[in-house]
Each structure stands twice: as C-alpha cells, then as structure tokens.
Image (cartoon, rainbow, N blue to C red; front, side, top):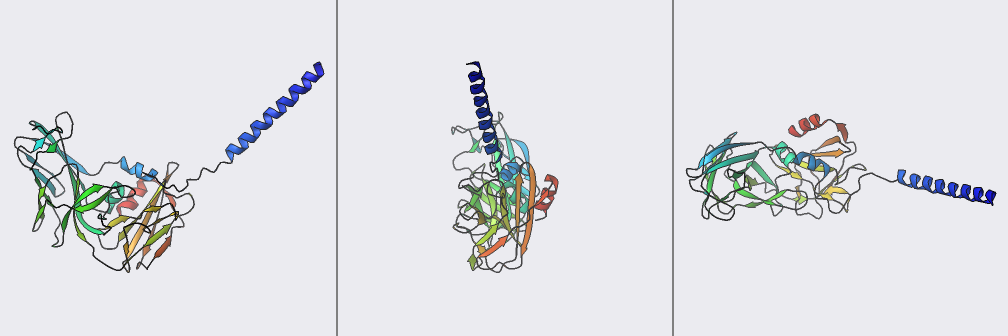
Length: 316
C-alpha cells in the first residue's frame, strides 16, 4: 500500500507540473500587438497630447464693468453685466476671463481640432479661439440672455466667415458650423460682433472650394493601428490641416466612407505619429499632386524622442 501511495503521488505531481507548463506556454505565446478596433474613442497618442495645454492667457475683470482679454493679437471683449450663473441667475462679482488660441498646424495636430466643417468641406483657417469665464469659486459662468461679446482676430480675407466648433464623435474633436449670430467688420484686423456662446471654439475660416474631390488611404506597418496612431494631411502653402480618419474595416487611415474628401491635384504632406509602449514614432511623406483614389504606404515609422516629435509637428 505504501508503494502504491508513492506511485500515485508521483503521477499526480507529474500531471500537475505538466498542466502548469502548458498554461505558461499558452500565455507566453499570446499576440500583444495592437489590433484595429471598430470603436476607439481616443488613441494612445491622442491621450498623450490631450494632457498638454493649448496656448492661452487669463485676466480678472469685474462683471459690473466687463473687460477684455488679449493674447498674440487675439482679443475678446465682454460688455458690462454680461454674466449669469448656470441656473440663470445674474452673476455679480469678479470673473476669471480666459482666452485660448490655435493659429497653426502644430496647434491643430496637438489639440485634435482641425479644419473640416460639418459638411465635409476643408477650411483654410485665419486662427481660432475659445473664451472661458469662471466665477470666484471656479464654476462656469454663461452669458445672460441676449448678451453677445466681440472679438478681434489678426487675419484678413474677404472670403472669411465665422465658424462655431461643435463637438464631434470619432477622429475630429469638433466639426465647424457657420456661426449665424455674428457679423464681421474687415480691415487690417478682423472684428467679429455678435458671439453668443462661451466655452466654444470660434474659427475664422474660408472654404477651400476646390474640385474634383477624391479619397486618400494611408496604410501603416503592422502594430500601428487606431489604438496608438493618428495621421494628418496638410495642404502645401495653406493653413489647412485635417485628420485622415481611421478605418478599422480597411485597417488603414482613409477618407473612404467618410464625409471628408481631398482635392485632386493639390500638393500635400502626410504625417503619421504614434505612441507605443511609452515610445514615440513618426513618418512624413510628401505628395506632389494628389491622385484620384490616392493610396500611400507608410513603411517606416522611426522611433524618436518626445522632444523631437514636438519639433517635427511644429515644422509640419
């Protein structure tokens, strides 16, 4: 009986370690490469840039007198007795008035706020800003009914219109709708009258209005997916930058199936950048003239430092 017990124990021990080895083999063979997913609300690189503040400045004014906040030639002026609490009651007291601005492709790429309107038209930007107002305990204020504020933007073009940034799903953080409440006085600078919303991006743009339009598709190496990578297009010579949407069906970044299209014959640059396992990667390619149904392969996203990626984006 003693020998039989030892024999049974030995067999059980062998089986136990055999099962453990198989489990460990299975775990170590799991593929951890990022896969394309049908619904990614924010890529790893987008989460990284969302932690960085957009250029802005603040000042404290009295609600009784109103006031102006200014940065780099952008200004916003609010009249006296303009503010209300969130419940609609009049607010009387000090107001922290803040203005944030985006003026170039660097700001657009880092913020995720690019130049496509709600109908899929590409816009050329003269600059965008957002005005925020907080009370003395840092709670959001709003404008009283019928109150409007004005702004000055250092950009002039007879075709410029005012657009409101509306929160969007998917790649673009906002899409742009014409701001119907406003009027423009054009001169050396552009004066916008009749803005009626706080905490909303305002963009001074003109439509590119060029045709024919087509799709562009950007392929990336294995592991560079919508979970960690974003791609953008910038038209040569224009302050016009836009996302190339991630398409999980195609396993690529593409305008196919989206409302946004690109202009045939236009010169452009494509930038893809990524954050994978705490490391940064990028690749830039130039298109001399966009072809119909253009396909472009990114084949070598090179590793870089965070500091150098910022330099690449700033010069894009």
